[in-house]
Length: 79
Image 1 (cartoon, rainbow, N blue to C red):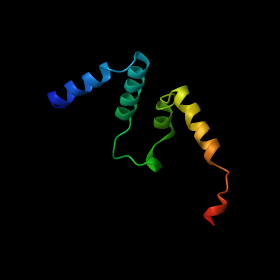
Image 2: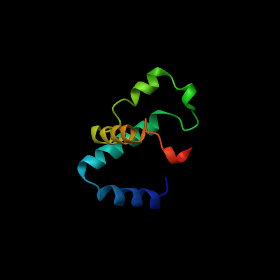
Image 3: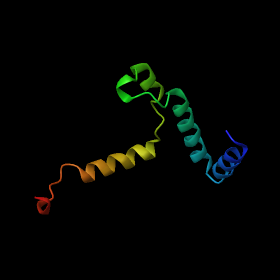
Image 4: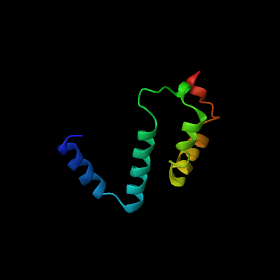
């Protein structure tokens, strides 16, 4: 990592709340656990379980709301 990238990361993370910083840390740790060139079909259950809990409850609720709002709807003008 270049010193410039490190400094910019630290500056940006310092602007976040403590909760957001914890989420960034969890995300970075999850990236470090799974090689970037690994495809989803090759990920073992063990490696998938390592990422369990890395999405915050707030984000999960938001995703659920969007899915429930957008799914199972028929757009009559689409046909």
